[in-house]
Amino acid sequence: MSAFTVINPSTGAAIREVPRADVGQTDAAIARAVKAQRHWAALAPVARADALRAFARAVGGAAEELAQLEVLNSGHPIGAARWEASHVAQVLNYYSADPERLSGRQIPVAGGIDITFHDPYGVIGVIVPWNFPMPIAIWAVAPALAAGNAVVLKPAELTPLTALRIGELAVEAGMPEGLLEIVTGSGSVIGQRFVEHPDVRKVVFTGSTAVGIEVAAGCARALKPVTLELGGKSSNIVFADADLERAVAAVPGSVFDNAGQDCCARSRLLVQRSVYDRVLELLEPAVTGWRVGDPADADSDMGPLISAGHRDTVASFLDDANIAFRGSAPEGDGFWFAPTVVLAEPSDRIAQQEVFGPVLAVIPFEDEADAIRLANDTVYGLAGSLWTENLGRAVRVARGVQSGVLSVNSHASVRYSTPFGGMKASGLGRELGPDAAEHFTETKNVFFATDEH
Ligand code: TAP
Image 1 (spheres, protein in one colour):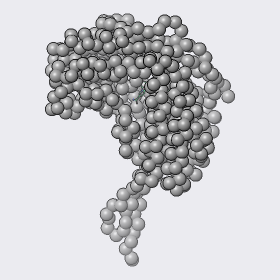
Image 2 (cartoon, protein in one colour):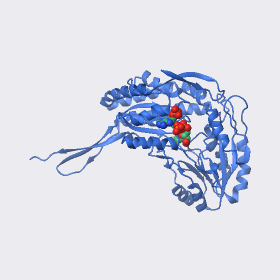
Image 3 (cartoon, helix red, strand yellow):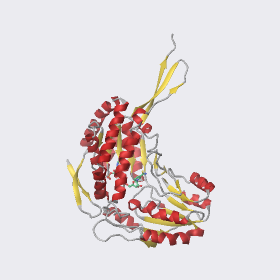
Image 4 (cartoon, helix red, strand yellow):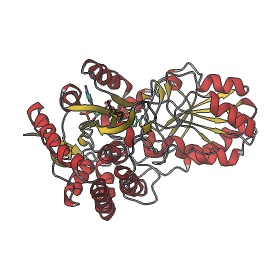
């Protein structure tokens, strides 16, 4: 098997070689998953629940190791990486209840009994991007396994290390061999094969909108369902009646967390014109105080960008930008980029396109209607926040903004117990929340005649 080199984004140094699977090796992984799934689906519900809980315990026990691996491979600050690793265990625990609770319905009909069953698809193909390797993988893996499926998972080429370790932990915890296959290598080979292979019955893709459209088109040709979690250009809307100190204190985290490489990043700050100057005045020290540095240091708020190529892409957005102020970042090796705030017009490239880096575009608005219009003036519709002390306004704006995930007086986006996903060009379908396992099943309706003839 050929191999590729995984790089530490904080130093640019090689970490290790990882196998690059070809189509034949991908097919072999799918074949192992098919076999394991038959055994898995036939187990008693409590056995599958117990196995998932054992898997969760194994991940919990290895949380520090996984977190350190993510610091090394993705440059996530250690505090964030620890949260991500424990989140994997929590998501597995949450969905471990589903094997015993995923019940169908008994529907009243004439002449017999009608029952629905939630049958697993079989094998689910999961394609993961590089920005949150652990959480995004487990959001699909846990409910898919809980519903009785096997999973073949392709991590991003840049960040495969934690997925590989989680795959090992599944086996160490006693999950059947082959049930969770981690296949490393190129997206256009392995991801494409998941889309085409007849034994992969559903695909979950998280990544760019451009690749997502191709994945969806391929799934349409193969008549298989697909969940898409794509890009975003989310807004933070600050009304004049907000608690401004509280709202602005949340801004750096809402856009610079994970160096802005977050599909939910609030990369547009919409500010009511009457408080525009005051908000910028409060924002500057919050941005210059944002600590960019060694991700292994618990005091760092932000690490590097993921690659040299991605840093070039992010930097290109500043070519024609009106920069208001910037924070600082280390010099030297590693793919560092200082947090940056720009003043923008709604139609500017930086206000329309996803930067996927630590760059915030600030745009003034006049009134509530204008704020909703600007928030919706993008092809995307993933996340967003609004800040106001007026309850009626909070309700109206939350209902008016076309996004899958919104928060009022908060910039929280993800809780594993609540649904997550995007509208418009941000995606198709929802992950997480109480119904996620059901999304990995097909409904079978069976009628049992009871009338005597
Ligand atoms: P992509 O380039 O789209 O890559 C995502 C995944 O797809 C990678 O594993 C990639 O493999 C694979 N891939 C590439 N070409 C493929 C093909 N032809 N067929 C099937 N799979 C293929 O995105 P990215 O640059 O890694 O991630 C950044 C994007 O993801 C941003 O737009 C961001 O907003 C979005 N994102 C969205 C969310 C949610 S939840 N909505 C969450 C995180 C990120 P390789 O690694 O080999 O290229």
